[in-house]
Image (cartoon, rainbow, N blue to C red; front, side, top):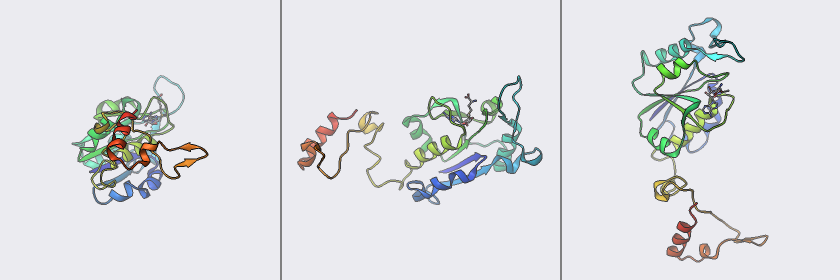
Length: 213
Ligand SMILES: C[S@@+](CC[C@H](N)C(=O)[O-])C[C@H]1O[C@@H](n2cnc3c(N)ncnc32)[C@H](O)[C@@H]1O
């Protein structure tokens, strides 16, 4: 998959790209490209935003700036999905992640300030996605959330089997995973359920199925 992220702070992604699972698939199953809106802004001094029509606080990301960034990257309108990250978008769920992980190419548009000029969402993006019903200061964290959630679904990102049975998976019928424990078996009197220490895989499996949340 190729994932292109448009942002005002490309360096914000450095930490994430050094971590597994993204580090493990970069250059293989995942090609990540970072574009700075300022580099292709048609305005003077790399201006990217402007005051909202109708007044009000804050600045709005300009449509001509985003259009220029997309033109420069794709020499025209992209022929793949372009996702605007915005609190007004479709809520992100594991089902949406699975759907997006099937794409060969994706573009993520992040914003800051008061958000996008609505014409970006209507005419330049194909999708709008919200990572949750709360407002963050900028779109870099939402882009990283989506990037991580997609990257861990790519072949080779995780150890064999570790993503098949987990919260929201089909294997658990979309429910949340059962409790997990590790050593020590007794810490301050907080004990691990006996069945998990029994070595009886049929009983362990049954216990886990009962404790899916
Ligand atoms: C401060 S927010 C803009 C909030 C906007 N004025 C509103 O009231 O909905 C700036 C940018 O951060 C990103 N952002 C913030 N919260 C988000 C969320 N829950 N989901 C996706 N993107 C978000 C978006 O790119 C957004 O345009």
